[in-house]
Each structure stands twice: as C-alpha cells, then as structure tokens.
Image (cartoon, rainbow over all chains, first blue to last red):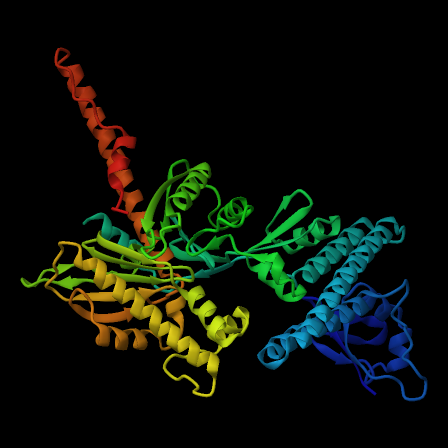
Length: 197
Length: 382
C-alpha cells in the first residue's frame, strides 16, 4: 500500500509523536512510516490535513476494508480534500476545453454543441464549487476566531495561512492583460535621434 | 516619462519605460456580455477581471472575454469594440468599454501633461464610409480626460520610428527614419512613405487579417473561427499543405491582400509629384504579417508586381505585434524631450527678458512664447 502526502509549507513539518519530519515541498509515503493506522490515528496528521499543511498526493485504498476511512475529516470536508477535488475538477474542465479545441477540427456542429453545453455545465458547477469552498473558508475562519484553546498568536497565524490558501485558490483564474519586457532597449536612443532631427 | 498606445482591431498594446526598461502591455480588444448577478460580480472581482456594469448586464472585457466565450460557447455574447480599424459603429457599448480597456492598460497620466502618443489608421481609400475622424476624436478626448498631452500619429509611421529604416543618398549621407512602413493589421492595412521622419505619403485599405479570414470562410463554407484558428495555429506560408483546403485558401487571400496593397500604392503614388531616386527599405509589421513565411511571400509579390519607388530590401519588424506601439513610444519620448526643452528655453527667455526689463525700464521686452504655443509646434507630422 502507498499513501503519498506532500508538505505544502515553506518550512519543515515535524510530527514529534511519530518521530517524522517532512521537508518543505517534499513528498512522503506515510504507509512506510509510521504506517497507515498510526498515521490515520494521529491527531497531528489530522490537524495538518485540516489546516492544509499536508496534501494528499496518492492514497491507495486498503484491500479488505472497502473505502478508505475518512480519518482526516473532522468537520465536513477537509481542506486537503477540497483542494484535491478542485484540482480534479480543474483537470476535467481543462481536458474538456482541449477536447473542444481538437473537436473543432473535424466534428460536426452538433457535436460541438454537445461539447459546449457540457463545458457550460461544468462552468456552472465550478462556480458552485467555488462558492462552497469560499463558504467553508469563512466557516473555518469563524471557528478559529472563537476557539478558546488557541492563543492570539496562533489565531493570527492560522488566519494568515487561510488567507494564503484562499489566494492560491483564486490564482487559478488568470487576470486580464499580459505584460512583457522588451529585449531591444533601444527606444531612448531612437527617441534621441528623432528629437535631434 | 511618456507613454504610447496602439489601439488595434484585435489587440490594444500599451508601451512605456519603467525603471529603464521598455514595458509592453497587451489586451484583447473584445468584450463579453453576461447577466448581472451578485455572484458573477464577486467572481470577477476575485479573478481581477476588468468589467463594466450597464443596467442588468455585465461586460467582461479583454482576454477574459475570449475565455468566457470559449468556456460557455456563447459566440453571440462575444463582441469587438473595433471593426475595420476604427470604433465599431454597430456596438453602442463600444466607447465606454474601449475606454475601460485603455485606462486599464495605460492608467492615468503620472503627472499633468504627460505625453502619450496614440496611433490611428489613415482614412481607407477603398471604404469611404469608415469614419476615422470620429474614432480619432473619441480616443483623443478620452486620453485627455486621463490627464495626458495627446499626440496622434499614423500607425505605419510608428513602424518607421520603431525600426529606423535609412536611405544612403548619392553623396554618402545617411538619412534616418526614411523608408516605407506597412502595418498589416486585423482590420486595415496602412502604408506610409517617410523621409527623415516626415510622412510624405500615406494610404490605407480596409483589408487585413479579418478580411482574409472572412473571405476564406465564405469560399470554403467554413466558420470564421475555424479559419482564424487554422491561421493562428498551423499556417506557414512557406510550406502550405496541399491537401489542406483552408491553408490553400489562406495563401490565396494573403497573396491577394499584398497585391491589393501594392496596386493601390502604385495607383495613388502616381498622383503625387514626389520622386525618389535612392532605393528605400520596406519594413512590414502587424499581427497579420506575423505569420511564418509572410515576408517571403511579400518579397515574391513585390518582385512580380513592382512598386512606384525603388526598393532596396524588405524586412519584418523585430517584434511585429508590438512594433507599432514601440514606434509610438519612440515618438512620445522624443516629443516629451522636445517639450521639456522648449519649456526650459521659454523659462530662460522669460528670465532674461525680466532681467533686461529691470535693466532698461523704458524698453518693453518681447513676450516669451508660452509652453502651450511651443507644444503645438512639436507634432511629428501625424
């Protein structure tokens, strides 16, 4: 079995109870150490997933126990699951757009209409998903703000982390306008020449 | 520092110098209309998209407009504020939308009276109904509203400023900014003949990349979008696939566009009294000329058809999509330098006059020219 996770932080993530450290950006197989059951039962791992410090890269289901236990979800869907679900959805939308491009080469107009309506539906779903995700961000924020077990500094740090996560999510939508620098660098020389004519 | 803007049928390109570097910002000249819903606005805000609200409709502008069109497949909602090189008279919403795009690209003037050079086409000879004057006035007025000192110049003349073609005269002296500039855009093709940065002759024809796409679409009974896609993604005029009917059609109409431009050039140049004996360089730019193999096709057609003036060589602008904006920036920086110099000279004359007045209280000094009067003399002949 394999359960690859990724440290999404810019620093090393340490799980002292498990004697485990994952460097910034590194991936690690939790099934090799400390093992599936220990990892799923660890509160540290659960919190790391919940706060988005760890992301699931690949989790092979356990052969005899049916669907994998949802150990990381404490309140509804975890941050990592939302991210993974959004990534999958994004891939599907992109693949639909690519297939639409290639379809336009040969397909009949009716086929094109099918692709378009499918993409249109996906877009609506994407909008719905995003609204859901943003609601969840708001709910997690509210929960952190009223958590009496957290110090002021911890609350501030966690809220900042959430803001960063939200910014990352919204970056999927490119902004308008493309800016490039020119390699020529001769505008001033030509302007001087023109001014002195 | 001065700025420049090239407002084209397909793209708007802004240019400026920032921290000593030349910066170009381009935006698709298009908008997409959608129903106004609270969440739609929120989404657009989050995405940093530029949009405008008119009653119950939202107009997404720029590159995002094309994305929304591709995602939703709603071609009818995708519109272009410009047509045939000028503001599209069929689009009522065109003016505020193009203003939004322009403001997004160049912003407000960084100081009052900052010079901005904006390019416009010449009035097309083959489509007298196209109103270049209205287009010019609307753009000029809006840029002034943003705080700029606006200078308008022909887009083909901007190519001359960007690429600096030169002519070597009989006695060995080199004349800079002298040659033929041709801007092959989406809506129009503009041509100027310049001598030492002065425009001696200009023409424009209402044919460009859109005309090619529409013509091929008509004869091949294929949607325009598919033709444009083939042109932008796969066309190489130096190696046409003989089994690809769209590519064959595109090659035919590309050649016809070049022939038409050279034909109109020859016909109208005859009516001028100008004679050139020294061979000139031709510089070609614009999105339509950016297709691989274009310049070789141009050379072949020019060899066959000839030109009304002796031609030394033909070359493509170093960055055909941004050449016009770059040339406008050269002009803007040059004009701002002249303006500052004139203002400094005016201040000096004023100071000298005041000093002289004090010395000889009886003699009245000649009033110095105002900065405004001087700036009127600084136009580069657009």
